[in-house]
Image (cartoon, rainbow, N blue to C red):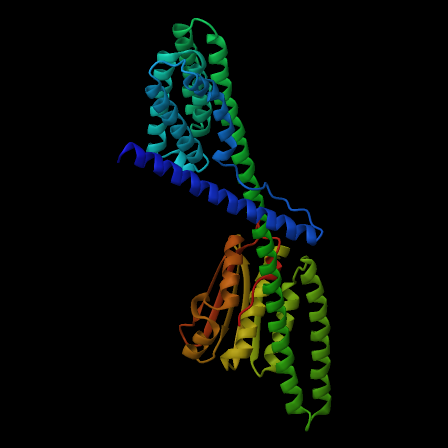
Length: 422
């Protein structure tokens, strides 16, 4: 590639970077305008910094350009070529320094090394105003070199700049060394701080987004769970009331009374779910499960043994009972359902088994925890140190088995809002 082609490549890269910066600035202005219309304050760091922020420092080289124009520079052709090459390398390095992958690329390091050799050559050859290229070299070094290599590079560069200045002119060596050191360190500090602020802002926005998503998921799961279970019970009891009404009005009224009670309880639970502070009672859930199974024509068998359970453990197991019993009522066509709760050896175990048709039940209810509710419950129990398994029983029917520590230390705040199956 010829020298002119290299210059054209640098100009093209500069123009592309300029176009990207303009697009980002336009987006930021549009966001500001939209936020002002809504009366909001846009918390945004603005367009990201780019090489344009470092271009004005090239004015430090005006002294050398003035020497060239006034004919005070020997071999002006060499000086002109050196000035153009230095500016091109400076622009190349600084514009690539604002993208981490480009900053750490070998081509950027090679360009910085060539820039250093060219600076030393021009300083030794001309001295005077040409020594000001050392602070510019320090600025490009601070932009391109970050982390532990900064001190290893910046300090020797400042010392070397002072030595070359002293050797060439014998004066202003301390000024050149100090200026080179400051330009290196301050540039690196400012750009690193700006990058860290943007990363922290992005991390905060990501955390806020995830918190919103988590809350939406909690609320949707809770509503799905509450409404699915409650509506299933109401439907079953309504059908039971319709069947017995012609021959036993008292029994039908009892079912209607149960529907009213379930509806009132559901309203209370939905209000508590909105606030996120609902805790369940395993005994109450077992009572409701027995009532729902009986109304659906399924014989309930409930056995409970062992030591009392922690409130959070009861809450999670209660939701497993709701999930499993709702699936039995809606999908199993079973005639018998056994619910067993046992706590021993530091763990609580809940088993819900029905005698419905195995293959059909497995497909409808999400075999292996594949259903919406069973999958969500599996995640919740795993977060609390437990496990959930669901699948066909060895002797037919369907079995849901949940295990939890009797005293879980780390439970999600929204454990009581476990998801539901469709």
